[in-house]
Length: 374
Image (cartoon, rainbow, N blue to C red; front, side, top):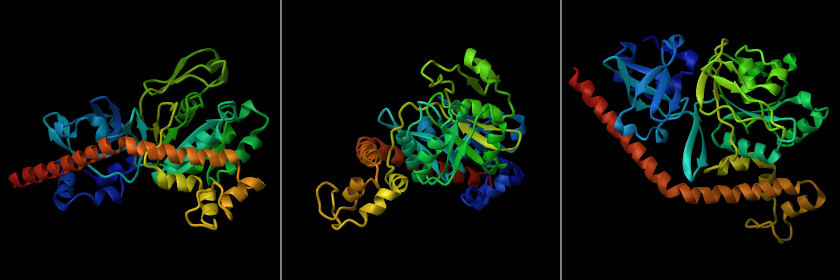
């Protein structure tokens, strides 16, 4: 197998250096192959390999990697071996980064190995700075560069007001777009390079599926979307009608890795009604960097920012330098993250131990098969 054939899927030296000499030689001779997971449907895993132009291949998952949701997510890289006419997973490569959240008191992997996270919001009543702060904390904690995409700017004559609010979050990448203003989509061009992997997150109805359609060179007519539910890309996305409350309909129901004509890889995610952060302390400090900076200059190192003299937080709140809502959301997210970490700690630690143990066993078994084949 020519390793360069994997580069359009996001393969890099980071993953290659995880393979030992024997594995590398077997990859070169096609005894083993590398696949990137493109979809997970309960216990069914699909992946894209060196012949990715021919479509997805179903990958067999050994018992040691069950349940699937605890070991894999869309965007992961795996090493597989031939099993008659099928391919069987023997190793999961460590990810450069992973998006995760808490769902039903369990750690849920959302996507892996991303270059950008498009945080899509809309210029209407669904716009929420607090929600954006949550997504930013998640992106920063996973070491993924966020891009805030303000969609539906055609719906308002106060676009600058929305953009100014987002700029207050000190985000480097902010783009305002509309499906009815094609020129605005050119602002995304900087991020849309071949081999780049982008995940899209946002609440239901903000226009993620419409944006996916446009990026796949599909025509989206607003009048049609308003009146009907239609399938714009066969087997990829469904565009939902706009509800009276301006929030749209939930359309994407599962994550899938898609490649457009320009070679850009996208992972769309279902609309998230409630994003619960998990172990996102570092991300929160980055998302609320202004508050962290103020706190470092308080008179007392152990300042609780309640009644202490010389408290920079209280002073900033008093003179309007720090918005009360911004401070309140930071406090809320800190408490929530700590609570979620305690709730998930026991089960999460056990799962991580079993995952590490399973990977060690699979490496031993793989080495045994290699030695036996000599």
